[in-house]
Every structure is written in C-alpha cells, then in structure tokens.
Length: 162
Image (tube, rainbow, N blue to C red):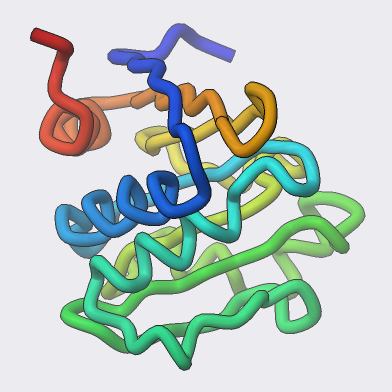
C-alpha cells in the first residue's frame, strides 16, 4: 500500500464523542467521497457510522446494519451508501453485488465497514478510518487520506492541533 497523502490520529473518550466525530464528518461529505472503516468488533465503527449518517441528514431511525444486505442506501442531504464487507469472501463476490457501480460515478458518498477484508474495493482516492480500543470506552482513531479530495476532507474534519 502506498503512503497516505495526509494522516491524523486522535483519541475519542466515549461512544458519544465517536458519534459526534462521525456527525461532523457527515456534514462535510460530498458526492464521490469514499470512507473506509477498519477495526475489530466493538471498536466503535457503528457509533461512527451512525454519526456520519446523522451529519449527512439521514433520519436516525433509518440507520441499520447492512451486514446481510451488503449495501444499504440512505437518503439525506445527499445519498449515503453504507456497505459492510464482513460476510464477503473476496473481490469477485463483491463485484457480483453491483457495489462497484456506486464507487465509480455514484451520486452520493460511500461508507464501507470492514474495508480491510477486501481493500481493493477502495478507489484510488479515499479516506480510511481505523478504530482501535484504547481502554474502557476510549478509542484511538487513525484517519488516513489518499489523494487531494480526501486530504481536503480530512483537514476540514480534523484540523491540525493548535
């Protein structure tokens, strides 16, 4: 894997803080943005995704886990496609779902959980968020941007510490 254009690391002290971070990211998303999430079970991906959806104007009641549907579309201020690759075996199986049509020229933003299972699902330019347990309810969040637009998004979302 190449070196990211930009990276930032921060600590979230609670699920609520992780949700708020997601909401801020959701407010900034534009059509064509791709965000991949990586982390073990219980790392906070769901809290982050629910926050992103809320920030993108999706009704809280609409947000569900797409584990069995693979991709779940949400309607907010922009279309938001939430994918979960956990149950897929490989790239060929992902290809058969039609998921790649969303990535190539889709009309909304794409959030993908378990991107590390099929990393080639990511486009050339994307934002990767890795969540790790940092004790109790704290989580370390490592955000890495590959490309100009993802770096711009990351700078707007997590400005450099002053």
